[in-house]
Image (cartoon, rainbow, N blue to C red; front, side):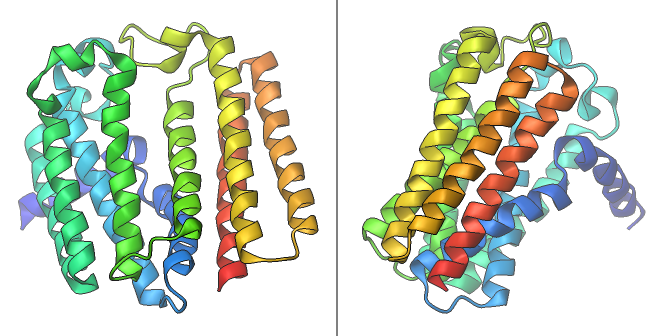
Length: 296
C-alpha cells in the first residue's frame, strides 16, 4: 500500500509535465461528444465519460511505451525530463501502465464487441510501435515515416471512440468526413507539438522544424488549419441546410487562428507559441461542440 501511494505521488508530479490529465481530458471531451452524435442518435453521459476515460488510459499507455522506447535517446537529448531526473522510474511507470491497460480493456468490454476488438487492435499496434516494428534504428532514421507509423495509433483510437457509441460503426459519408476531420485535427496537434522556435530544436533531431525549417513548418501548419476548417464546414453541410451563418463563423474562427499563427511567425516567443497552440485548441473544440449540437 505504501509503495502504491508513493508511486501515485510520483506519478502526480510526472503527469504535470509529461501527461497533464486534466488538460487532456478537457481536450478530448469535445471530440468525444462530436464522435458520439455522428454514429449514435442518443449517446448517454456515461458513454461519453467512459469514452474519455478509456481514451486517456490509452494515451497514457502510449506515453509509458514512449518513455521506455526513447529512454536512451532522452538520456542524451532530454536530460531534464522526469524519468531522466529520477522523479519516477521506468519500473514505476510500468505499474501505471498496467492500470491504464486494465481500465481500457474493462471499459471496452462494457461497451461491446466492436469496442473490445478495436481496443485489442490498439494494444497490439502499440506493442509493435513500442518495439519499433522490429526494425529499430532503420525506421527511426526516417523521421516522417516513423512519426506517421506512430500517428496511426491515434487513428485507431478514433475508431475505438466510434465503437464506444455504435456496434457496428455505420459506414457513410458523414462518418468518413468526420473521421478525416478528426484525423487532420490529430495531425495538427502532433505537428504543433514538434514545431519549435528557431534555436530551440535541441540536439535530438526529433522536431519538424529541424527537418523542414521554421518557415516551411509554419506554412504547412497554416494549410492544415485551413483543411481542418474546410472539413468542419463539409460536416455542417451534411448536418444542416442553414449553412450561411456556419460558413461565416468558420471563416472568422479560421482567420483568428491564422492571425495568432502569423503573430508567432513574426515574434517567435514562448508566449506567442502558446497563443498559437491555444487558438487552434479552442477552434477545434468549438468546431466539435457545434457538430454535437447540430447532430444532437
